[in-house]
Length: 444
Image (cartoon, rainbow, N blue to C red; front, side, top):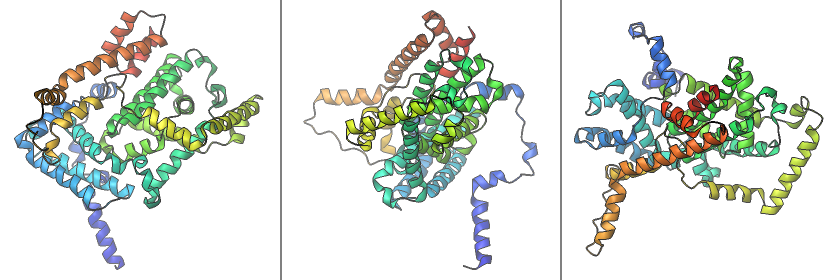
């Protein structure tokens, strides 16, 4: 290919690339309406409306058949045209499809008539549906058995997951003072760090980029709440990132690097902005700090007990490896004991249990119809199947009640001096958003 042909091809690709097009200044852009300050404040304060069940029902309508066909065609081609795609190729394919299908929403009912709020909900629903179908092909840890055949992008994810895990174990003994965390945060710090780590650890329970992003947001908001309580939020990253580093070291979250890369690749670009962008970048900065952390660099600013604490931790690591047989056995044990699905502890993000039931109801749209039940099947079994697939609303309410109770228990343990009724009132007012609830309770 000549240089002229290459330039022409690059220009064609550039014109087709919707992400590049958004970066080009538009002469009509100045005509776009400017959001008022109160509208921006409302967006920053509240999570956008999201109801996956509603999207599922919309997708089942006869008018949505073209949308279903487009989606089926994309998923089929993604799975059949190649066994393995490079990470960059996957990102390009998925994001281009989302740009395409979101435009088609404006052409076909019932999406064509939706207002901005419900259209955003449909876009979120489509992202969740598509990535749920492609998760095992796109999330690097799911491809671990094929590591020797993977592209550099997926390989690097897995290598950095291992490196981060090694560093977390090496510096698990680190105390807040080693990271220059202000001493005035000592009160309740362990509880806040524990809660923040638990929120971040939920990232492995979900497949949708939005759901994983919500875990990051809630983890960071817990940290930010204690900073705000002590009036340290104005120091920005200088106070926030050390606490986030400390949370990661104490939480030992599995495959965290791969989760961050997955969000960056497959979360629709326009949905990562403002607060979400800041927290995601902060998490990446904290991860990079830990992966490049060396003993001598940390010891240079630590107190005289650092060396003894470091050596004691090294002995604990060695004893653990000897007790389990190998480091791989520790990792395997953790994977088998923590991957079982659990309900989340608050109702900010969609429930995967409910989502599974909803998808099951219209899964025939994306897969061959199941065989008819044999006459020998009992009426009891048929009734059980029907109840399992149709009573989604009851399941959602039950899980929601469990999550609310769990959230109350967690916050009660953090604020034992407060009446449970007061904590419950705050949770209701803040829609059980953990970070926002903690922030209010600290101010009481």
